[in-house]
Image 1 (cartoon, rainbow, N blue to C red):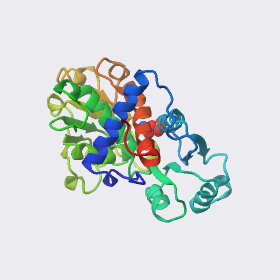
Image 2: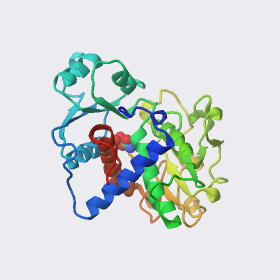
Image 3: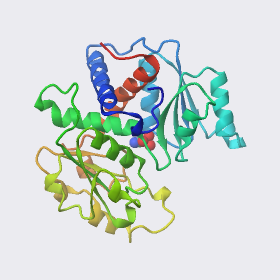
Image 4: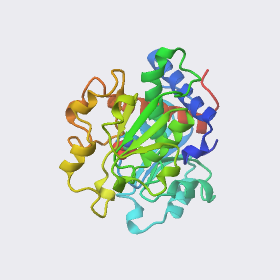
Length: 316
Ligand code: CP
């Protein structure tokens, strides 16, 4: 595998190999190996045309922990603001010898274009393109789910997420996180229940590998995990629900809804959160929440992706 643009680029075995590699890297970190020499002499470019906190910082940290040289490029403050095209930016990175380019772009398909036009030889990793996909977010979510829910079944290495039920709730229409998660969770054997108002469901979702529901309350007792999606008001150019209060009342995760989840169920959110809208602060900060673990796991999983794409085969 040279690029990671979409979950479709991964077989089930590829995805499990990434999770297993992350688990081994985690173990090495716990043994005190804060920095590995694997990518010494390699250059990783973070090419961010859209704002990011978690993804940009975690890719930067992941590349540094693997001893790569890291360049972080924000479109704001670059020659993009003078009208430079994606192609000319790619040719510039090619001339500088980039080995991997981590790209976030507001246009769905930008990562695919970089990977498949021949402008640049580097491995391309999609860090979120428009409303299309965010594959490393789905991988870190799968890692978090496996760590929290399946380790007690025995050895997690080599395992998928067979038999668990995950609810994904909210603004599915605008969510690249939901698209990548539905595909990956299905590939790993989980049952996915997508929940939200009909206005925030994509056309054709009935053909996706998931169950679709329009009420949250009936689904809660069957969920092993619930993933709340951010309501992406910046991508909305119309009215998708009557008001924020109405949305929270119908689909928000609050204390009384969380109490109807099974005792072992966990709460995820990819961030950034609209506290008080799709999730209350009380639930986001509760013992069920694994939101900060998701962020920590993001570093390890992105190390694994860089390791496998740029550095080599497996950590033994
Ligand atoms: N989850 C996620 O992509 O967060 P950022 O936008 O902060 O990178």
